[in-house]
Image (cartoon, rainbow, N blue to C red; front, side, top):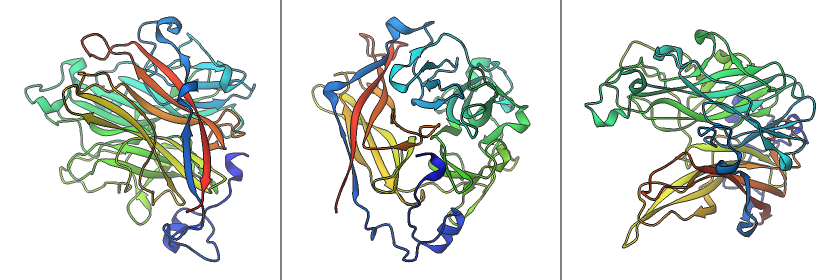
Length: 404
C-alpha cells in the first residue's frame, strides 16, 4: 500500500472534512461514536535490538542518534534511516532491517551568527519523496543559541542560552545522498512571530516535526512549538498543497488552515498563532496510518519523575489515535524505560518512533500488524550527566484491533 492509496477515515463535522479535503461519508460519525475498533500496541521487550552502537559504530564522537528514527527509499531501492545529530549522517541498506552506518556527511549548516538566517545548526528530521526516491524533501529543525556567539543576556536563568528555533525546508536531488537549502527568505516554514531578543527567555519558536502524511494531494505534518507571548506550547497541525514550497504550509487556526508562520513581526502583540491539538502535550515523534483500524497514530514520549528514597526519571513512550488529525484520543502506553536511580532530572531515553520494515510506502508512512518501536538510549555517566554515549535501539511491536 502506498500513502496515496490510503483508505479514508470518517470525520466529525462538515467544516473539518472540507478543511482536510477529504470526502464526507454518508453517515458522519463523531470521534466517540466511531464503530472502528481500538488500536492496541504490544511490545516484545525481550527481543530488543541495537541498531546503532555508539562505542562501536560512530564515525566521530558527535555521531549520535539525536532525533527520531525516520526512513525513506531512494530510487535505486536503498533504504535510508536517519536519527541524526546536526552533523547529518544516515544509515543505509537494501532493507530497513539491514541498514549500516555511513560516515558520509549528508548535510551540515554553516554555524552562522545571524539568528534571522537560521543557519547555525540544523537537524534533518522529516523526509518525503514524490517520485519514488529521486528527489527528497526534508523538514529540518534549525537551532540558534545566542550563547554560541556571545549574543545572550545570561543574567536571566530562564534564557537557556537564548534558544531560537524554526522549521525550515531542505531538499535532495540525488536520492538523499546530499541535501541543500534555499536562501533564508525562501526556506523558513515555521518560526516565532517575534524577532530574536537577547532577553527573550526560551526556548522560543518551533522545535520539531512529525513525519509527513499525504491525503488527497495535500500534505500534513505536526509541528511542536514552545510557549511565547500569545503562542501556546504544544502540537500544531499544518497542511501544504506544494511540499516543495515553504510558504505553502498553513497552520490550523481552530477552524481552517489559514495561519502563515514563515514570517516574523515587529509587534509584541502578534496574534498570528496556531491552535494546539488537545490530548497530546508532548512532541509528536511519529505520524502513521494504520489500515486495520482506519486511524492515524501519533507517537510521543513523557518523562515521569519517581520520588522516594531512590528517585529517578522514567521515559514513557505512548500513542494516541485519530480519524481526522484534529481530534486525538487520550494517550496509551507502549513502553516505559526505567531511569537510573538517583539520577534526576536526566531521562534514560527519548525520541520514540514506529517504522514498519514491510511498509510499501516509499516514505514509511504506513504500518501493519508488525513493526518496530525505535528510540534512543542515553548511557549516562557515573555522575548521572548526559554524555555523547547513546545508542539507537528498536523493539518489535504488534499492532492489533480490539473491539470496544
